[in-house]
Amino acid sequence: ETGVTQTPRHLVMGMTNKKSLKCEQHLGHNAMYWYKQSAKKPLELMFVYNFKEQTENNSVPSRFSPECPNSSHLFLHLHTLQPEDSALYLCASSQLRGGDPYEQYFGPGTRLTVT
Amino acid sequence: GNSVTQMEGPVTLSEEAFLTINCTYTATGYPSLFWYVQYPGEGLQLLLKATKADDKGSNKGFEATYRKETTSFHLEKGSVQVSDSAVYFCALSASSGNTPLVFGKGTRLSVIA
Image 1: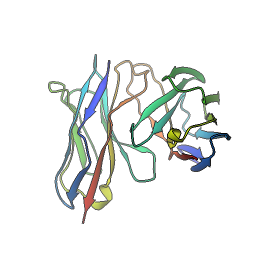
Image 2 (image 1 turned 135 degrees about the horizontal axis):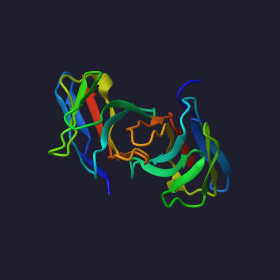
Image 3 (image 1 turned 30 degrees about the vertical axis):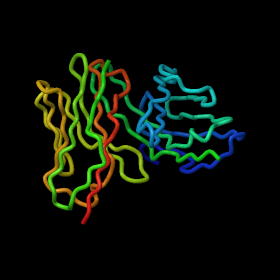
């Protein structure tokens, strides 16, 4: 595997279900991100992890719970979601170099449908 | 704070037409600027970047020049193809380098044969 991978690619879940999205980066990066992409808001930053520590939470509802066990893996645990949470969830990673410009590398996304 | 504004879409062009997607930014210091592209069903991919004023980023026939005087980074291509149909995002990286990229809202481009 190369780059940033995400599983599953598609997920349909009911509002009472609990599921998890997984992201893995094979680039040796030290920062990882979750984004939500929907028709209403093209690209919303949800969470940021630097060196496995959460450094940003953009007022995301508690029904979304991130987990970063190491710098290569990032999870998004989902429970009691609402239909408006249906969206494409994108994971990204980058290498923070302190003062240098950096690029974020994105996974293909998980298309989530909440019924 | 830092922000990016790009032209609203969708943009529909005929094959071989000239493309311009406008992007302007607001930032303190000296940000780096990026264009990302998202093809249908995929994540975002870096298309090109520029790290300082007057730099020109280029890739796959696309170009953008970092204009500090007009705080702009417009994306251009001389002759678009159907395969260029995608959503294009302009983004900036704060000069500190240790914060997430700030993205524009994206511009959907459709190229028809």
